[in-house]
Structure formats: C-alpha cells, structure tokens
Amino acid sequence: MPKYIVERELAGAGKLDSAQLTSIAKKSCDVLRKMGPEIQWQESYITGNKIYCVYIAANPDMVRQHAKAGEFPITRVEELKSVIDPTTSEA
Image (cartoon, rainbow, N blue to C red; front, side, top):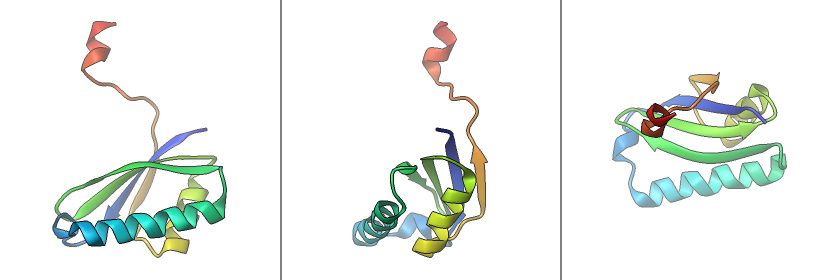
C-alpha cells in the first residue's frame, strides 16, 4: 500500500502536553479501528505550529476520511515516493 505524509496546521502544536498528545493519539486510534485495516498510522512529528503524520493507506481519500472522522485539521496530503537517509549514501 502507498505511504502518505500529512501536514496539519495547528497553532501551538509544539506546546501540547503529554496528556493532550495521549488524548489525540487515542482518538486517532479509535477512528482507525473503525475504518479497518486499509489505513495505518505509523508516527507523527510535532513542530511549533504543525504536525506531520505518516500513514499507510489504500488511497489519499482514506487519509482525508480519517481526518474528518477524527475532527483533525488537514492541510495537505502527499504520497511518499522514496525515503532516503544516511545509509542511502552507502549504496
């Protein structure tokens, strides 16, 4: 299945405390369970005013459906085409 990165604009995202992050994660997982196995959340990265989430999903519409069902902001969805890291230089 394709992998997607989602950009979410959320003022003050970097100031969310652990209880707030736990609540967000629980809500996301509840929605994902209802949606079924064709969408998986891998991880998220939080910056000052944005959250970047990585999903594996059958299509980008499923990622948007997840955001709508969970009432999560969604700014942009992009399909990841490749991933590189320092070990890529060793090929």
